[in-house]
Image (tube, rainbow, N blue to C red; front, side):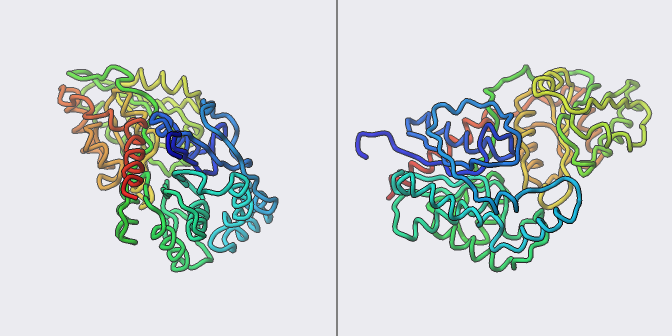
Length: 406
């Protein structure tokens, strides 16, 4: 392919306009390679349960789709209501080895054949999830197809602490993982902790490519210097109360009592009203639950805030998970109060980039708020590193370096 633009295939499941939590990562990968002059192709699922409400410009990509067969479409349905049907589907999902996504193996393989095989591309990135996308690339590699392959993972797979109890032994799943990571040319992860786990588990060079956000800093003017922190804003879901804001309420109650001014906590998220209704009121703290708001309204609330609130749970999974909201907040120019473990990915990023404070300890949160009001918070450090452009440029660098070595 001398003299021609290098070709890359981004193999994924969710993709805009499907509004799924993993839809933006393949777009960010594709955009990063476009900026380096690559010809970007995308092979995505032609079926999904997520609403088609994510408006993103993907016109520069060459997009193809694979069509999951009927049984895989049925078995992946997850009815909200608990019923005999939902329980049967849940059981069926846990019975298919290695997991139910392998039901899509033949449709995806057929779509790859229609493209002419993976060796039509200089590089293939299998991204996000399900893990079957990685195993398909492994199989094509072992057939003798020649292409640089990046196995890009958003979350853990075998042994993940948030997966429901599986009927397939974890030892078997790890053998599948081992074959994948011993075959790929590059393994990348959206989480620092997950990368460390896989590097130790399989002795691989695990690279970290955080999700970042599509805003060039500064998005807003950072608030520094002496100022009262009175309005605290949380945008996003509370997962039925699994994301617990009560340590923050305790802290704000102490701040209100010490400093003699009312603190306001504004919640904008689908379950904010139901969750906050169960909280015990704190003197001097006013809670306003707005329910679900638009992206534009959420951005406006962030711009009006004195500090932004990010809520995580204390689980092992939450320690490995860096929500997109953190990057969004980082570029908003406001101090962040992250209810998160200090040894979590979120905690380390907050500390490294001086974004604010990460703790479940009300006393530590109070000390940070008081210090910020005295002008001791000077704004975020090297926040440009948290943009999608900066993060995914490192992926292109790694791929091009890998290809030069071959």
